[in-house]
Image 1 (tube, rainbow, N blue to C red):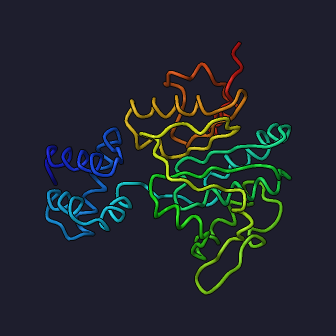
Image 2: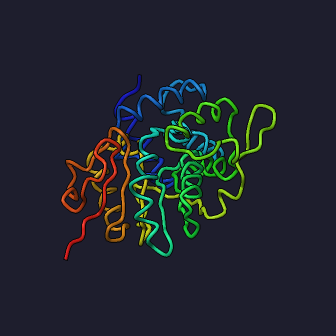
Length: 271
């Protein structure tokens, strides 16, 4: 365990030195991850972690891996993707082109999932903006290389999500890993972006940000919701994680529920 003072000093040091703002992240979640970091980096206390942040330039990218949650999988919560396929994409196909923002894309599994769905929906003119706070995650996402067992498990989720072919059609296997076709990333722009400090991506038709907000405290959740509201076009869609909701946010009246179970909302038209 460590004191609140040491915890706050480390979070402030990270913000001052690297402009990564974890001050409104869930403190209980951050503390659990920092306890793991102490073990990983063989440190006795947070003062040692803070000293490394101050003096070892190559240390901070490693620490970020512990401060951010990277739990993800392809077609996670298949009902969400099936609802997009059946209820959202037919409407979005009426636009001449689409801009989609996947916020908190982690190592890219959701990006691959979206690209496959868009391909199977016959939507060709689109750009996906895939953002994450962790540059190491973005580099892994660009390579689109995943563990064979992980992809094997994703195959069943792909079918549950209404997949029209075989997931194996989209990758090449080699030894204990697979690489997804780079064509799936040809319309993807990867970008380092912090929901805590950075600005909007404008004129989005769909924003998917799932299982990220649960790690934020209420004021930061509010900031992010307003960010999404400002980023979406009229009638644009917002997808959240299974434990996240607009219900108690200040922008709830600006959105209509399109799929309550799968947490899909549509920005309402206001004169």
